[in-house]
Structure formats: structure tokens, C-alpha cells
Image 1: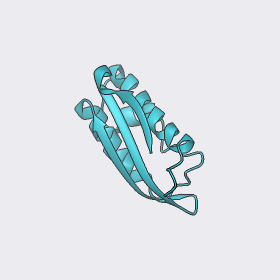
Image 2: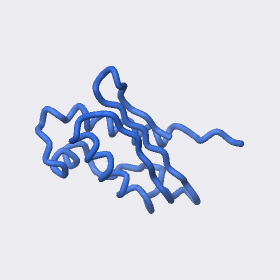
Image 3: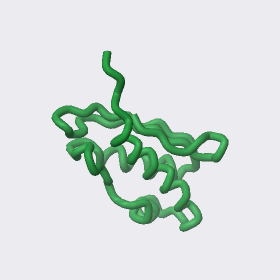
Length: 96
């Protein structure tokens, strides 16, 4: 699980992935934010399965801006998404 942002800041993102053999098998996202943020998160979620969790980077914030036709003023929101993706690599799922 990886999170970025905060609701009080206007954007919050949480990605949850199922990993097997160091590859993302399934990805889910919870997002609070503007329509551009929501669209970018759902697009990115679709890119995650099949990718290696280590070094995971399904594009750049600038690419996501273009993908969802967002104005440059939304770059900060895309950086929050990037923070959540990076947190996926640092946050191990608790053992049962």
C-alpha cells in the first residue's frame, strides 16, 4: 500500500497492490481530488499489473498531465500520485 497527499490539501491517493514473485498482479486505487487527479489515478492503476514492484514508475507526472489533458497547474496533483507510487516500494504489507 502506498499513499500520498491529504484530503485537507485537496488531493489524496492510495494505491493497494497484490504482489507475487516481485510483480504487481492486481492494483486498486482510492482517490480524492479533482477529475484530472481521478482520471490519472485510474489510468495509472491499469498500467501497474505485470510490472516489477521494485523501481515501479509507470510514466512521469508530466506524461500523466498530457494523458488526461490537464493544465500545468495540476502538476502538484500528479506529484502526489508519484509520491503514492513511490510509497508502494517502501511499505511492506503486514504479515498475518
